[in-house]
Image (tube, rainbow, N blue to C red; front, side, top):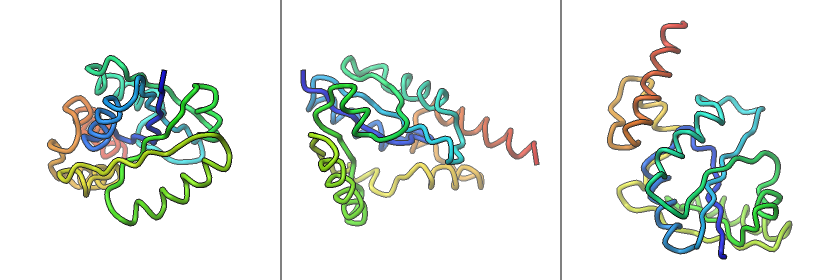
Length: 163
């Protein structure tokens, strides 16, 4: 079985993430969406919430499963028998960073990185931008799945009421 990992923070999951996961699912027998857990970083959603959103978002893909990891991605890949890391590229600036990461990962483990160009309609999309636009009341409904939009709206409303 040829297994790939699609790693990320997914805070929150966007339609761009789902696009890359769906395309990876056509290339590999199994895709493990690997949610990075870094307690030192401040996230809008907990790891469990992000896993839940991804589980719902990917329910239609029979060969996709959701998991989490902390520490090195290459260690996770070894433990999961992953042969490739799939990364979406939005722009040349992504390539510069991701190439360096791919080379580091291959120096740590026998793992390949597959770069998938983002579909043009998602080329500008980043979780950080979605959060910022939503925080200021902008419409992000075309950028995230409906259940993610509800969770994002609820979380941001709760934060505003706490202030």
